[in-house]
Amino acid sequence: MTSTLCCTGLHRGMTSTSTGRACAVIAFVIAVAAYPVPAAAQSGQLKGKVIDAQNKAVEGAKILMAATDTGRKFETKTNGKGEFIQIGLPPGNYQVTASK
Image 1 (cartoon, one colour):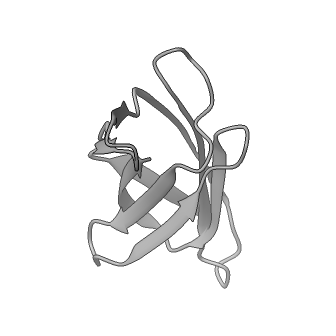
Image 2 (cartoon, rainbow, N blue to C red):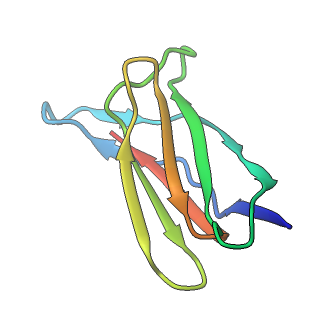
Image 3 (spheres, rainbow, N blue to C red):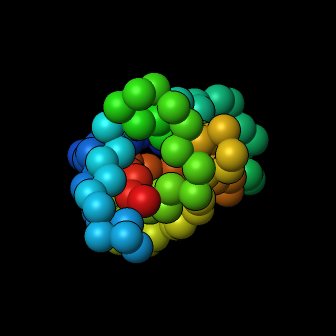
């Protein structure tokens, strides 16, 4: 059995920082894990990296993953390398957004 997570509707977010300056998350690279799982497990993971226009990691970016079929939402933040991982996701299609 194969469990597949799919990312659809990937957006480049534009939000303002606390200083009022606009900050654009220019590049959002995402790796979607699709791997065989036992029938009882039925979960997957989503991981990726957020980088800016200068190809530098964006630390502390908010990552929102919304299941398009159920509306269920999951949230995490990027680490110091701009990376994130969310484990235990139910299989399905997700709209993923990043903002800072």
